[in-house]
Amino acid sequence: MNVLHVFGVFYRNIILIRRSIPKLFGLFGFITFELFLWGFVTLWLRNLAPQDEKLNFILLILSGLIFWHLFIRSQQSFSISFLEDVWSRNIINLFAAPVKLSELVAGFALISIVQGLLAFFYISTVAFFIYALNIWSLGLYIIPFFMNVLIFGWALGLVTIGLIIRLGPSADILAFFIPFLLLPFSAVYYPITVFPPFLQKLTLILPTRHLFEGMRTVITEGIIPIDSLFWASALNLVYLFLGFLFFYWMLRTARKKGYISRLTHD
Amino acid sequence: MQTILQVDNLTKQFNGFTAVNRVSFEVRAGEIVGLLGPNGAGKTTIIQMLLTLLSPTEGSIEVFGKNLEHHREELLSQMNFAAPYSTLPYNLTPKENLTVFSFLYGVSNQEKKAEFLLREFNLTALTNEKTGRLSSGEQMRLVLAKAFVNNPKLLLLDEPTTSIDPAIARELRSKIHKFMRQNGGAILWTSHNMREIETMSDRIIFLSRGKIVADDTPQNLKKRFQEEDLEEIFINIARGSLNKST
Image (cartoon, rainbow over all chains, first blue to last red; front, side, top):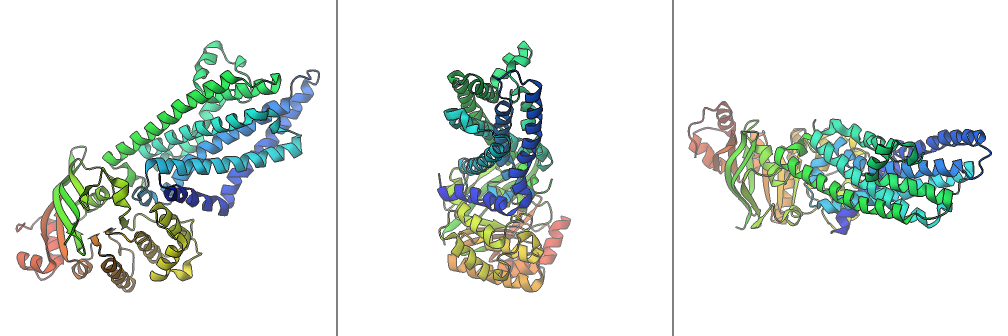
């Protein structure tokens, strides 16, 4: 793997984020307003059930919000980095450069890690000062949780890019839409016990479901659920591999059928 | 002279339509080869196969004697291309764009390289402007500067002077010529500007409906087709009224 190629992919996107106010707003603004929204809902819920001291609504719901946002960041870092080259008609220059597929993916992953860390530290600090939320009370669970959320975002990002290559630039809405398909079934804000039994079984295939259930176990019981982490990690490895295969397959099909040049003028 | 590019029986079909039909040619070191033909003749399809953006249905492409499909990254690092339909990111400055592509082509001293190319292509005054704010001529100069970021041994140019005024086009042609002579590389050049092709090319390949109908020096082509200039040959090919194929 050529480090210069990976850095080139990374550098191109970091310049954009550093300079663009709308992009900075995308990174820090949306989550701030979401934090206000869910923060107030959480305060109201806490007032409704003050007698139950075991429940820490703020930690339960806002931790879910912060990590869900991290997942969206991760998926969008991939797909929007790619879309930037589609929108600026640079995609032919990119694919004609001597960059391996693995180097392209590594560059996107690096962007996603940096954006994820920036957004995570920012929002956990804001949540601490406004709602006295200490996300670090999740302890060591934060590290594997953070990594797993990122990796599932990468897998979904690769699928999104593959679909954009196949369907053309007009499918760019998928980059924003796809994560929300998983939100209701990932048990981000509520436990899986609210699902009907068949859905509880069906959602076992989602790493996010295991991760957010695990997060609640840490908050409510104070123990790290090894089985949740194991299933999330194992599923993530499979999905990352499948995501890469799908991306590779779509690119191969695109080279056969001429979809790459269509990306510049569809 | 060393063969830089060898294309054998190159064919590309899309859903039964043959865009490029058993095309074979070679480009040697130091040569500038013009690829001419009417719209839909298959010029851009050939360029895209040479850039690995399209995979051939049949045939092979060798660069420096190595199969392009099997040595993609190694060979692409010695090639580059420019076309008006493939612009650089509009929200980066020219210097940033050239720096990014220096990284992508594995070039060291990226910033110095970018500054050198900005000077060579008279873009220094626009170093910190956003690329999207440049005129189409300035953008094309930047695209051409990017094409020299890795000192390519094989340069593919797809109608590079289309959106440029004649004075700048002439200046760019001379720069391209100078750069390639210094590098000892070769150029495959498509254009609709007959005078440009005639001035620049050592050899011209005429394409029609995906097939090569002529491959010779500009002087020999004019003699063979008994025409005063290349434009007449081109028009006859476009009308399909050329009977004297090679």
